Each structure stands twice: as C-alpha cells, then as structure tokens.
Figure (cartoon, rainbow, N blue to C red):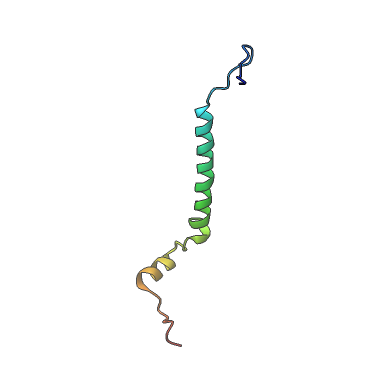
Length: 67
C-alpha cells in the first residue's frame, strides 16, 4: 500500500470557500446580465412619450380592418 506523506515544508492546501463564493457570484452576475440583455434591454421597450401613452390608453384612430 502506498500512503501519501505530506512534507512539513509544503503547506497543506486548505479549502477556499471565499474563492468559490466569488466565482459563483461572478457566474451569476454574468448570467443575469445576459438575461437582462435578452429580455429587458432598451431595444425591447416600447417608446415612452406622450404619443405612445395616448396610443396605449385610447387606441389607434386608424383601424387595421378598414382600408
């Protein structure tokens, strides 16, 4: 049987939960940014001016069914 013997001069690799948490948060930030760009970016928003608001509330004066 082979057993590993740690050398006294070599530091033991300890778990680094802080690094793991930072990596997980970085991945989460990248994914949330991607979702924002895909679904909530300014290109996907309707215009926000008086004419667009009136159009949304009152409706169009031109019917699509009538020529």
